Amino acid sequence: MLELIAEIAGLFSSIALNIQEFFFRKKREKRRRFEEENNLPKKKMLSPYDRTNILFAVVLIIVFVLGVFGFPRFNVTSKNLERVEKIKELLEKEKKVFGVYPEKLQSIKRGDPLRKKLLIDDWGTTFKYSVVEDSYLLISAGKDKKFETEDDIQFN
Figure: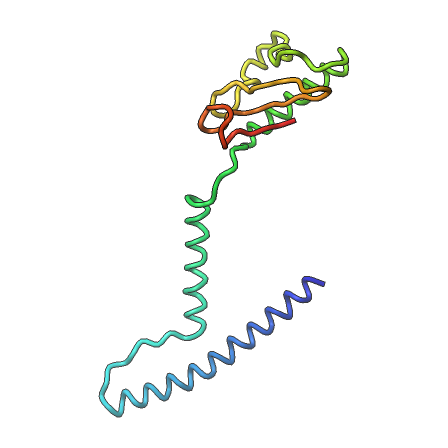
């Protein structure tokens, strides 16, 4: 249904643009005759298609600039998410085997050298971990590398 509405809207906007182009050409012909009769230089006139293309280009530039510089970025990166998922998996295994979540996050490493950097987020800070009742709270300090600030990322 939405596709049909989008098609109809596209059709109407195309028709409206063509009508504007028709009247623009009439206006431009009239202007060109006036310029020739009075020996005036030709004035640059932008057609509705030109204006649409310029507007489209400006919108693309604005979106690009905002995307690169303006929009706040989420601090969760794919590597961080992979680490968190692995930590969650290991914590759930611990709970399944021992019936409770571990007291310290370090215990899930179990001396495995492949898990050496598992407990460190993308900004080089060790995850903060605490057991809360029958659950746990895992916190990344975020970009500023300080806990209890606005950019902290919480997982549970």
